[in-house]
Length: 317
Image 1 (cartoon, rainbow, N blue to C red):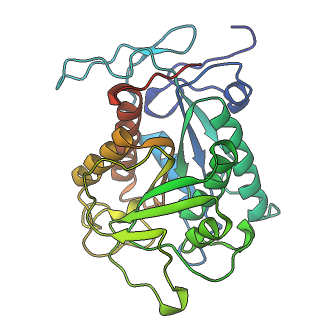
Image 2: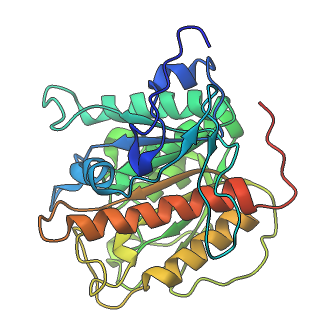
């Protein structure tokens, strides 16, 4: 392919890396892409989430993929099933949107606008973007970009907190990582949100809760009632801090990783997931390897379920 440079093994998980414009311009077809969002300006309290993509990439397992001239994957077997992993799929690491540290002269609303536009462009190619944050406010511009491509979307979110407030939030500049769902429901970018893993209280001043926002601790393994486009959002503080302490706002209790993986795989298998975000990993020198291993397991589970295991779906490029 002319002017398309594929860098085998240069991305997270040993995946091939390409420049973001190569996919966004449709010069190269992709089934899924990974994009890092090293941004934590949406957190008023405990920063450090900007390092999430860096931790994931540097310490993720380097799988020994084969990559053909078109970027299709091969060469990896799952010994538990005997099957090939992501065989023939084109999954690329696009690097990060911005660097660490983010230029302090760049307003956070400018970052949100750029992410919204890029999400719209990537979604228009037919690829499923997997975003690695970064703080949870990033789910808002991602959702706005998805809605521009698909119409209003559903959100399935795993989170220890109910990130909602009923205060007026007419623009993305008004949000934080703790209340972005209010903006999405007020503006209609999201038709509804299901939150699982919630185990904290919400100040009464944040209410009342709309009917479109449904909170629960346990995820119900039931079939979906519709085929609406869905954002799968995973806040890593949903995991029990005894198992995953490297997050900014840990809460006692929570899911074990295997429980979360099972729930995430079910969402990917039974919903029309058009994008995934994994957010709120915190820089912690003692826990970085475990942090990367957790994010890596979630990314691979999403990719394999969406691209290998999902039944009755044919993706045309």
